[in-house]
Amino acid sequence: MNPKKERMYFRKEEKKGTTSGLCDKYIQTNLVTLPKAYAFDFLLFCMRNPKPCPIVEVMEPGQTTPKVADADIRTDLPRYRIYRNGEFTEEVFNLTEVWQDDFVTFLIGCSFTFEKALLDGGIPLLHQQQEKVVPMFNTTIPLETAGVFSGNMVVSMRPVPNHLVEQALDISHRFELSHGSPVHIGSPEDIGITNVQNPDYGEPVTFNSSETTPVFWACGVTPQNAALQAKPSIMITHAPGHMLITDELDSNYSNS
Image: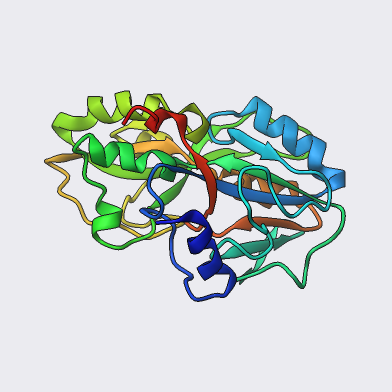
């Protein structure tokens, strides 16, 4: 699939679903947009917490076209979320009515980028098979504070067949700008997750707990969790599971 073609579907609101499984091998990114007054604190937050917040690009104030895609970040993601004073207020399909000239946009790596590599390695992705948004969870894993931004990490979960867990680690480890290797394997209660069938974001997936192991990767939804505590006047993010598909092929696929 062609990234620009997919983005045009989103711009015209002809598609509104998850971007998982779309445009294999192309880098996908999370999006965080903030007024310039908060930008330095958030940049420092990302630098101190590179696992959940690996920076792909930081755009200039008011800029709407990133270097990594011939796109308009106000319209070319399938869904956005708006937070005001730390409270989630609405989910929208474009940002044209709320856009401000002082907005600074951060594009943050996403684990969807390495999903094709997992599939190529024989690792099934149950959320794709079941046509679900990948399940994501708040955790008790603390983050480094930066200015007004603090909190705990959000993780995405993919159940992996027991005999393929090491392979999943080896594959994802290469993708440092897409969260890299997992932050936790098995025992979800050890990181504060009490019920893997009740995700905080996304949708639950059905799996056999005796044959598969829940594997948890750092997730770019983490800034949404941090926003609840930072309480910026306005903060815009992608809706969980609904990313910017860039025009950049991940270099880890160059030899495949």
